[in-house]
Length: 298
Image (cartoon, rainbow, N blue to C red):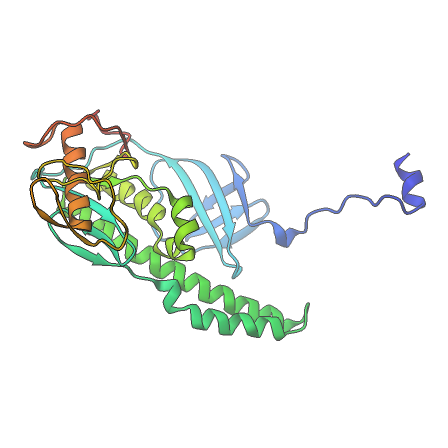
């Protein structure tokens, strides 16, 4: 029936996916062999690679990924023995509040500016995109222009990742317990658009959880519905109305004047610490999720 309709032109045979469309492939414990001299044999072909780190433990899977530039990366998933990092606990605790103008505000008053790497490179991105659109489809010049555009995007992504990694490393080395507030990323993207993606809050939380596990620090997330900005950290009074333009506000009960971001960071610290029983703080029953699954604190 299919071939009869195909002769009449009513249907067409299925189109197979081109090899260039595949971005990754995962191999389990077969199909490859690691050789000496940073070489790997996949199937019958032998390839040489640049090793960024030594392979530890038992290899479970090998994922081969190719980015938009055509660069190929090898990702080894290994099973290693769980060894707790040796760390002298100092008891330093801090709460952090995410922001738009300031990337992070600490409970001790430190403010870290927001690095908008995509915004800084948007002019070059637009210029490169226009060059791609002027090239003839299928031509070699268009392929080169697309590679140049991908190279610009890759540079911005590497700048953001490098900033997040260095900041996460610094914070997890300085503090033993770090508390953050859960965020509604989709809702924030609807309000502020691509700026939220440029800041990369979700990627930073995942990275600081990983660095905390490596450095022996504990990272906890409090409930996103807790009104950290509207609550006075002195008397715990919750104000009814507080717009985003109100960066400085005064508590109607105790007359304490608060910086919005610092007050939110202090409340995040109080709620997180009291939930897990740290410090001399007011006990509050606020739900949170722990980003460190190996922590024995509930």
